[in-house]
Image 1 (cartoon, helix red, strand yellow):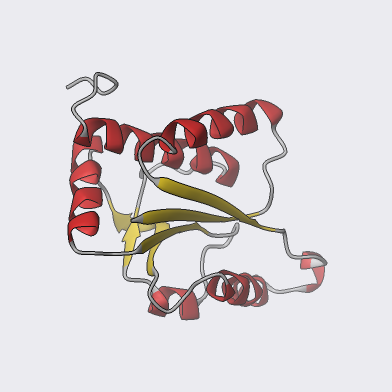
Image 2 (cartoon, rainbow, N blue to C red):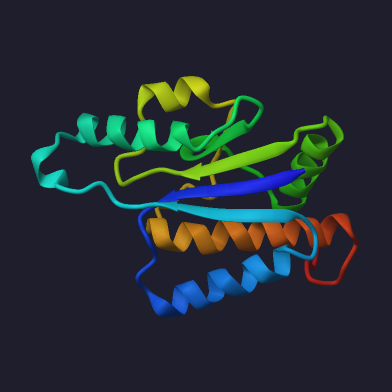
Length: 157
């Protein structure tokens, strides 16, 4: 299985980017992982919230292939413990999913079109985090999930 994380906008905090790169490298020992950044929409001041979501949605959907399974990182999604998330990853691998795509939306969330295309939603927390921090937290949880599946000593119960 391949895992892809799609995010809107680049990470401009060098410290966060260094940590994202570190966990991306660690994750590569377990699975083929790709972080794809969609550039910020230009001239957002001239767009309504819904227009911005629609434009971002079109860009997100253009990055998917027909067989990809789409999971949105969404505040209203299902919450997991780290062990529960690792078990969910194992189920996806066992079911033969070829590419699992997670998406971090823009500042206003996702368009209705993206919600309709998604096969699931995951929430990392009831708290709100910056979109840049969510990348780090999510990639670290992916890494943690694979160390749990391999019974490696990274995660402590």
